Image (cartoon, rainbow, N blue to C red; front, top):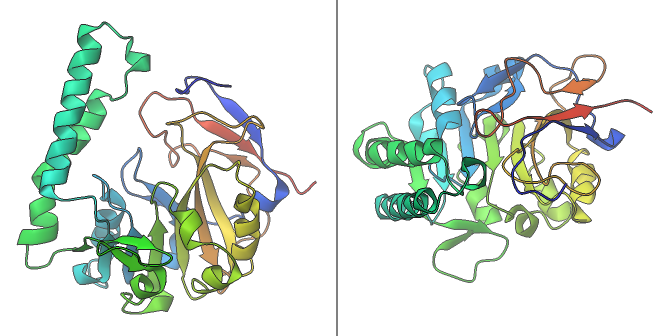
Length: 289
């Protein structure tokens, strides 16, 4: 499939190395892009979140705080992203508006437009809520305006190791990575993966599952984690083998035991949702064969 938008269901016969273990999953965040699934029992052991990548959406972290408000301080939810500010969101919103007006005037079909009304709405909400969430409130999230990289070469960067030091309790802090392909710079091999060995839950969006490093990094992560959930990002095409080009994955530390057996099919009704409402989901079929 070569189209850039996905409007029909694709069944992915995923390799057994990606088999998700059974667990009682719960969704945190919006029922669209930005929400993620993780095992309910593990939440009792969580009191913080380190998020590499902010964008215009932080519903996962907000849901975590609301669910665990008696156990989590907002200062234990830390974001790293040098690209986001009030000015940056406003600039993005202006660009999206101009692009949308141009596409409407040129009568481009809705399915081919770069941005949807939902995208514009989300950015507008982000603009309105960014200041109170990250700057004004006494109990506010921490936003460090730096990109997380393997090796620092610029002033707006912080090393992977130094970013991880912002966890108040490494064994109780979720790490979430969604940095538009930057994960390949962070996780180059075993040494980098081992830095995450104490993380209770690792949530990561993999960009370009065609890369040879994809399965190599997954195997290294599985030395410390088991896979709890997969979700194909429907905002882009699938690969020649039928796998989503972008894959959201939830890894859970092996110190938390999964339930018996593997999950044979995804998505899960009522828990999994497409990136944008109305898009058809990727369907996964798993087996031990």
